[in-house]
Amino acid sequence: MEIRVLQYFLAVAREESITKAAETLHITQPTLSRQLAQMEDD
View 1 (tube, rainbow, N blue to C red):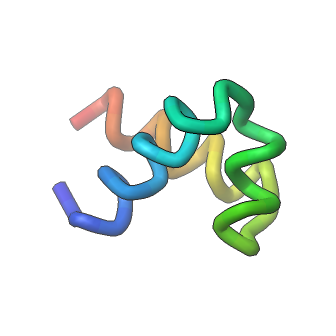
View 2 (view 1 turned 30 degrees about the horizontal axis):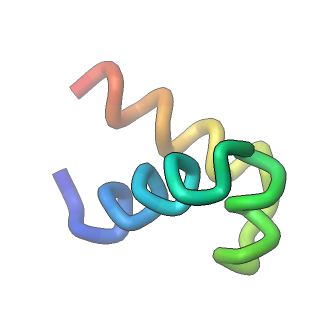
């Protein structure tokens, strides 16, 4: 598991929204969702 993905997870928890977290992280929402889904699979 990469530190970057954990930072994504923390951003979602902090923002309480995947869309808001994606905006904060300057990435698209589908990319963020995909990364979180992959983290769940791992």
